[in-house]
Amino acid sequence: MDNLKYLQNETSKLLNLYNASLFNDVIRKGKVLIKKFPNQILFYNATALSLSSIGQHDESLKILKKALNLQPKNIHVLNNSGLVSGNMNNQKQARWFYEKALSINENFVDALLNISQLDLSENKTKEAKKRLDRALKFCRSKGQEEIINSSLGFYYQQIGDFQKAIKCFEIVNKLNPLNTFSDKAISLIYKYKDKNDAHLKLMENKISLTKSKPHLQSLYFALGKAYEDLKEFEKSFKFLKSANNIADEKFNYNIKNDEKLFSNIKNLFKNFDKKNQINSEKKMIFIVGMPRSGTTLAEQIISSHKKVYGAGELSFLEAEIRKKILVNNDFIQSTISNIDFEKLKEIQEEYLNQVNLFDFKERIFTDKAPLNFRWIGIIKVLFPNSKIIHCQRDPMDVCFSNFKNTFTSKSISFCYNLNKLGHYYNLYSNLMNFWKQLFNDEIYDLSYEKLINNQEEETKNLLKYCDLEWDINCLSPHKNEKLVATASLAQVRSPIYKSSIKKWQNYSDNLKDLRNIIND
Figure (cartoon, rainbow, N blue to C red):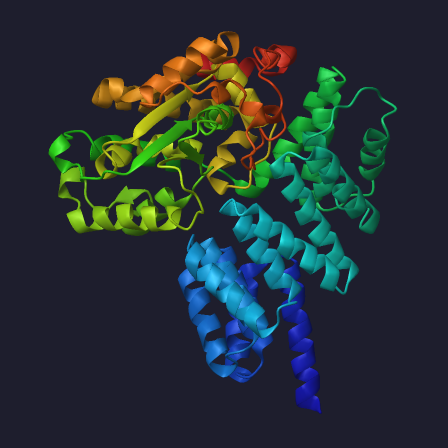
């Protein structure tokens, strides 16, 4: 009996640590408990998920494998194995684990939710919706209902049905009034018209009730957007600054890491010779630039063409580069010519294998991960026939647009501090100048402002560079039905408009330091 009580106490302690996101403590305690109680699967799950949360995915999977050896049909372990595989960008393996869990219990809500997100990431919208509907049908708790309605809201957001999205997020608010992630989601797709707006008042009332920093961050970003709509720019900036302070503290971004990476990238291609390029016939278009520079709009335009499939922001290339040839921002060799050909070939093949998981028939596809601007040299080695579109936008507009938004990727953690953001922009600009000297006219510069002001001519020039014949559909990117999951999801569903140009000037008094950094 004492042993049972001890087990219950230790389980409770471990779960409290996990719920508090104290992952290193969970790992230390979990490993000890696994040795003491090797048949308690919960200890394996908590330890493995904590390992994955701090980036130790391989070790996480090893622990889950031990759990599966004990209980091969444990749907929770299978589901968690899928989550960790997804964190490793191994979509194929993740899907296998989810489907295995669902073959054991077809109504397992957690696996239905996770595989629906995988479906969405691969543009399989019908499958995603079916799984979400099934999950909602079989959910058995208020907490699950909240998560599923959130997922349905994000689904409707991405396909452009904003009315249904808002209804789902309103259900979330009723289920859990302190869930501010739903408020942030609503703010992206809703126009606030006056101070008496019901949703604005709801958010203001939540300020004193919200204690969690992540929820406060979402609430402040949403309120910043609302007050910008109302043209109360000082109040808007106050909330945006508060939101960014929370995010900046969480990510603790250090510009020196990127200074090192960018320097190493330039050294890698210092004596580049086109003899290093790998033969590839695959037709693809990489759309790169600073986040919020118009990359989503560019993809919507190009993928409106009948011969082009828009794959969205793909993380595969960076994941493979970091797995195969980059360790702690140091390349395994100092120059690209010294990197083993087989390593480069593996990156190329794995990237294409991941793309082939998408369901499309078009002969050309786009990859619009903005930060691929760092890998332009490697792209030209792996895919010498690829087209590279570099999206450019007024530096102050692009930087402030980053500051106003929140991102899921840790790679964009430079954007939550105006000083860091300005210095990162300068690093980006310097690297792009390096690539242009190296590849000259192989990179197409697409000006956001020129595109907005002269849409038809700029669209024709863009298609010409991509070796695509004219397609009238490319003039109506807002009618493109492809999924959009970025911060631009509301803007790209509207016809092209000019009001986003020089928008930073509404906040000019608060952005003097940023302007000085960029102009140095």
